[in-house]
Length: 343
Image (cartoon, rainbow, N blue to C red; front, side, top):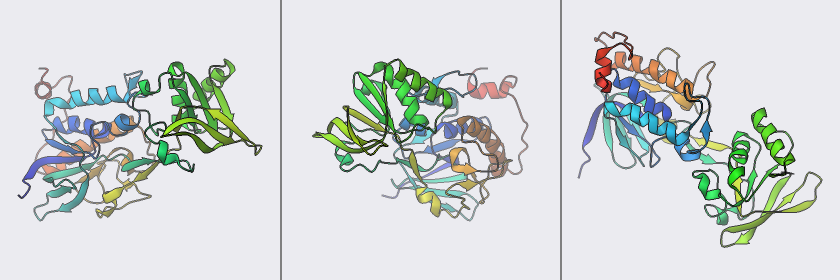
């Protein structure tokens, strides 16, 4: 049976924070959106990699978790009736003779839209794995590359490996609920916020955790359950660390996947855009969030929200070249308030 084509104003590729906020901005301009995401839920990296990790730089929210931020953005977008398609990867993107775009997914969905917005973060992301023999046997049982639920690690003997923000942040955030906490890094310098490094050293001084210099060389345990690791110190000597859980945070490898084959200009696996419209090299295709690049780009959720607002104005003008756009404020426009259901 032939899959029925879904017709809409906008297809948004990626249901992370930037894609979700784009629904709101486009909705204010009466543009209907369908969102496609390879994950099984909304929120992108926020939901997949750090749903419970505190985020401190969202305006007016001094602290918010990735999960809560996703929930609030979904609530904000709800009045505009977006349609979500999860566990789907966009495989084909082509421009039709009438100027619309046809989008096909690996699950057989077919969309036709006036505008396409790529809000795919860094593409598909995979954790960089440490070169430790046999680590695969422990993955998902006692070796984890992300913290999805903090409760998973309550009363565990946790060893975290790495020297970046994720390693330091989770050392500090998990320490209060673990039976024991240890951090191992190959050197005493870190690629993390100085405040986090200071907090970690304070916990060590208070004997609430341990810090080890060195690198893990082998794992010990049976049936996927760790009992400890062997590490090599900077002096070349081996030593043992007892643990039942290992969290290696060595960063992420970003893969664009099919996006790389869509005929867009790319620069170091990112999509260059202008800062007026956030349009790609193909008119009608826009890119917001971590997937794009431009002079002065900051990879912040905050920046992506700004990009979504300007993109929406440009996308409306592209889709409706003869229409007049009157800029309105949600605080004072009764027509916008009616759309939001608050008038």
